Length: 278
Ligand code: PDD
Image 1: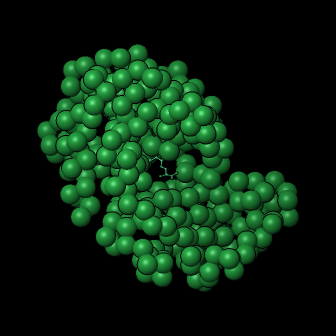
Image 2: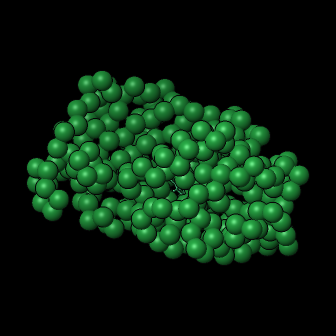
């Protein structure tokens, strides 16, 4: 594969990042995942705007290529022969001696890479997934998309070990989000529910699109926390992310949502979302 690192396109095996990069030593980095379908990016401006917000929140300087990120995204698809897949963007604060507070003198590190994947063809998207619930033990700035992903990696590995494919987190107010997704549920009254934005969850670009599509379609929508007990009476549940698109959730901790089949609202929103991407 060809990646973009600090101003140049290089083969992945030739890419060099300093051992003193603060993204490596301190996890001082932020990232984005944006997908392309048939060569067209989905919500690229929203992803780049969130990258700006994450950088600002962490006090990381913009990489000098900031204004050209969308053309680099396009070029990475071309150079890697990807038409449907994802582009990953990571920015770290750069290189400094290992000292918590010292500011790097050089540029922010920018790494971008492309990966082919057909999101509409996965069994998760088509058939749904099984998830477990875990207490949200992450920090309280989940609105910042940082590369400190240890809790997510552990939660997802743990889900696999339990025979499930992902984890949804909860705090004292209810479900926060999935380990790499936002969570929606159709409640007992037929209302589409998802947690309102705050520092306790990531403002998903897909979440925003789904809320818009649902409102346009005339579905009742409520942004409020989902209680764990509500899975027992919910008629549908799904998760959203750039790569999950809208993926049905069939069981939570081994208990079926309604009859355990993919519901009508979920299928409708999948169709509307996929149509809007093409
Ligand atoms: N993750 N919440 C968390 C914790 C996430 O990591 C993500 C996305 C989302 C959904 O955001 P969006 O709809 O903008 O993709 C919510 C990406 C896909 C990842 O880490 O691979």
